Length: 150
Image (cartoon, rainbow, N blue to C red; front, side, top):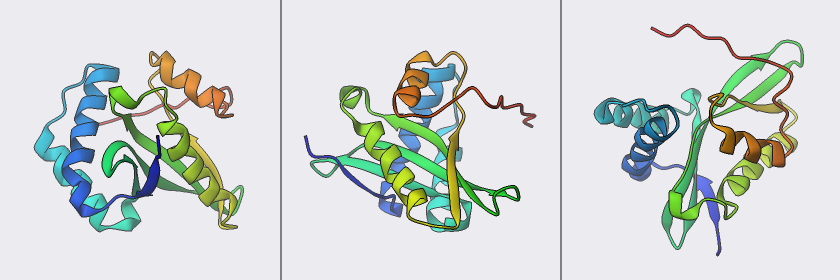
């Protein structure tokens, strides 16, 4: 199976939005409003300052995606890439799709002196994803994420 990784395009909006709605339901049993997600995805695809989507394609069909955002680190005088909104279509899981997406982002960081690392957060009950992240060499032992959301 040949997996191609590329930046998300405006033409990918509906697929990425559907992935996000499916991911929220699957991982947290949280029902997102599709129209709101679609608008959010479209805004990010139009404005790189909000982040970047990357998609994985097999035979010109999108089978996975992730979104990256940026965090300035004064400690490192560089930017940390945050991976968010990860989704791989069920029929393509355990086939290396996420690993390819992750390695694409990691290679970007390794080859850009202004970038200094990769972070992500994961729902504490999503044990399958945590195992994948650990296998890829990520460490979840250092920080806990706290939040307040409106």
